[in-house]
Image (cartoon, rainbow, N blue to C red; front, side):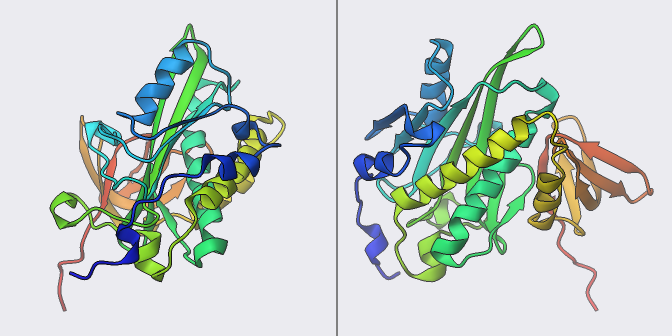
Length: 277
């Protein structure tokens, strides 16, 4: 296998990043660690200590990166985006999944002008290019007496490196570099992503806004709609055709029996067509 320039680790330039976000809510309290266990775990502890909304934790390397369902997130030091943001939204707990969806949209939007890649969202929390995974989002939150105390959204995005074959146990992966053969500035990409996410977040908090724009966009950017999929919730395994994602982020399926089912969480895989000619 050829060695490429993306193998060279480069430290995240915090000054350049922070300077571009002076007017953004995510540029006021930025914490950088060269190496950390998990940005989500670190930021959740800060959230419990009362750190303000908009706090961002960024690292060049995670020693215990987390994905959904207890899976591990692999990334080479100084190559990719590894970060978490802290929110304290005034919205009911059953709407929090919207935040995962709009962070995915922000990632897609930030990536397009810098790379030309038109990525998609693989419900519920992954960013894909074609059949390959580019990134994932881990959303964790605390609710007390029906009120949301905080939400921590973590993202890992493969910018200039992706895991080798031995780590690709569940799905093929890729990176922006692997797709376009050109290095992308992590600082600029994250800055553009968080500016976009801020705009989406403020729109989502507007109680007079029905969110139809988001609803339309995350359906347009879905990687699974119209396809036969399998969703596993931990309690059941359901097969059906993905027909839409509603305004709360719930995935609708039409089962083989013709029934519509909705899911707010689950592990989704696209069924391969093995019928043959």
